[in-house]
Length: 64
Image 1 (spheres, rainbow, N blue to C red):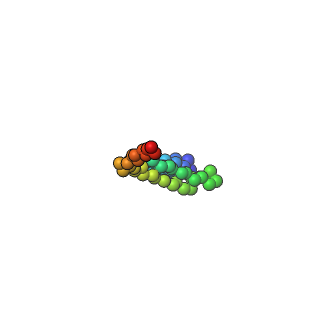
Image 2: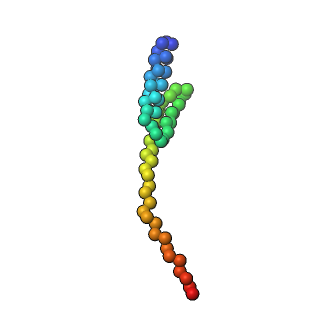
């Protein structure tokens, strides 16, 4: 039975490593129920560069 447990642990570690592969921004959420991992969720976020248009500087008014 211990041999089966080792192969399950190896499989679990492989799945977690696959979820982490190429993840730049995001999270891995591992759900445990009754001391057993039952779910692995991967949330990936993409960071985009926001380009600002050329800002027009308002001219100062002189009230004189």
